[in-house]
Length: 444
Image (cartoon, rainbow, N blue to C red; front, side, top):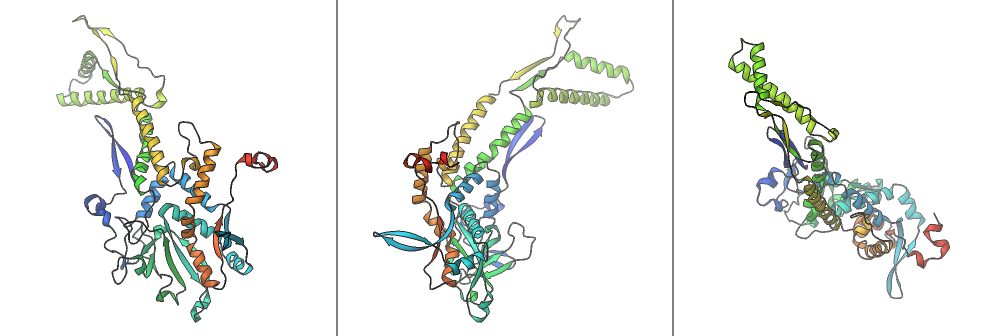
């Protein structure tokens, strides 16, 4: 996991960057970007590795779970894509323009109601918005044993548990993959893996279950699709570290570091007291005792001067005049200005840049992501125009890929029907364009 660790030393507290998402392959290989050039062996199977450590989905999951923006923005994107939910439709031409005619069909609906198709579609959208693809398992009906192909239900398998089996002919093409391996790839102690044939291959004709990988192809990659926010991942990691750094600053100091000046006479008096109480000690015993006293005093001062719970703190001491020299012996605590306010301000600016880069990588306008920058949110008209652009340009491809499995099943089960599954999204109009009775304020 990419984060900072803090070490307390005699000279102070130090922040050390530890990136556990990088594996030894990523750290020491100069060609770690070409991790899908050669197969990896898992449970005796040659699979196409997904990332330098064959664990890219789990790494993305851990990174998003630590981010304050990512999960919310992506869930908002899922909601916008889902709209009012799935519906059946047929393609038609209206005045020479392609159009959808939303419809219903009793036979198809009966099949859909026999399994939780809405939950399946939501899972596909979650997988797609994170990894630009999804793995679907086609569970066949009993008729497949006698050559009657029927898809009983669909299941969206977690991408973290799925890997493409390396093609037998070594062709580096997704179309050459004939099997998919399913199991735990973030815990290699598990030895149970299931091997499913890819739907459409000869091996899938008599199988009780088959699988398919539906994705948006990534440029330069022959197998897996990569997240659309790959380029924003460094910013995500930086944004994830900022709260931890601020928390450590609050815990370990108030505004500045200090130099504590301790009068020499104080320690001379301590030494004389020890010699009076323990005349039998050796020099090493006096030295060790003095070190313990210094450590205890240092710990006491540190507890008083640091920590946010110690606001309003004070330090009590007694000043005195050395009679032998006539000079005043006194304690002094000298602050060292560290410009923490400037550091925090710089980190806040970096955080705003990271937030902007993050939302851009997620492919959602800040107006739709509900991101408030410097206490300002977008106006209703800005949100409306952003929504229209999103619906007009950013929904068709995600919808086709997310619903590719269920539309493929419709073609298998109902070849004579021209029905497809789509996501119905109601058009939103400006309030001033609606009648008074239809406006939102009068329907709450």
